[in-house]
Image 1 (spheres, rainbow, N blue to C red):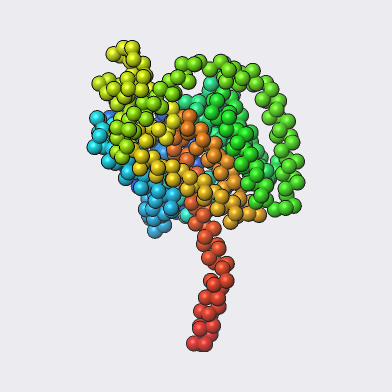
Image 2 (spheres, rainbow, N blue to C red):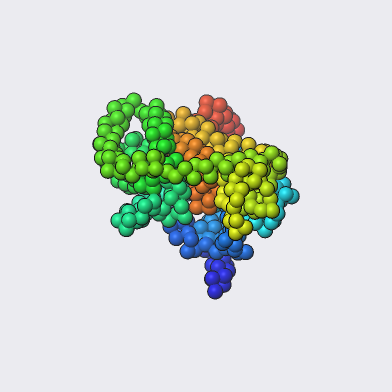
Length: 458
């Protein structure tokens, strides 16, 4: 039945896209619906060729309402003759290179269907990126997108409060795991922190609420990696925002930190016993497992440094009859029914499954957007828009460092949000380049020359 509903929904997307093209307001509602659909992602996603028992980064050829709405937005852009380029930015180019460098791993994969599941996910994620770019390019709806993201952060906070009152030890909001929630909320918390610093309490209550909500989500997950990233990422955001703010506003920004710090200290004091417990009472087995699985990944990389052992094939290659676990000293006495987990870092996971070239390109892709944030901070200095790249720079620092401890950046929901943020930065960069070109002296001279030529001809 659900497959019939899916195909009917797919057939409805082209006419929906045409309808969206007639109104910017409808397109705004469509991008909000994409973000809102993440709140019910598990209930609206369909897995073709589903293998729910498989312990890998993809368990089926997943299609969700998020992807269908992304397709509808691209139809709207095509109808208005405003489709973005297939590779509209340098960051997108690096992702495409990374995608193609993952494909040789099919040659070493034990199960190519599992490999296709991850490849399909990568294609769908790029569809989200292109649709977000199309929406932003058609409407310049940066504020609308940020409002939608604020609503998403606040909704997660309400779920975390509900779980807290119900006695859940580590709530995860709409995400499948608490580490996924904590990692995603770092992007939200830092961006809305920067917006709050520049705008103050009265400029936008929604931004303030989203900042408080996303920060509370990070703390309440009790994720050790996420907690360790809070002072680092917030410091980066604060410094970049201070440096790029108009001089007259800097004193006021410092004043805004005081009540936030007071509230934060009170909240930290209430949760401190549990937080200390997370660091001091963590089971030794958890630490040993991380180290052992990292050694297993090293063995895979040594065996297949250029192609890897097969994208999304970790769950096969870590178990018998393959001997990577035994070679690394992992669980020598495990039973036949035991199935090992995934290495707890996205970098070693990609290196093991897809090889060193794919890993190096993925790292360059990640870092390119951190560099882009710094470029935009300099370019937009003194304007309200600088808060977005300044905040996301701090968020990316947390994201990339925490990824050394988690493989969350292979999870679908986290990547969907990441691609939306990447699209937002690329759009801001594109608009900034056009404005610089329009105000450059050379451009002004060209315009004057053209005007003079027209006058002479007249």
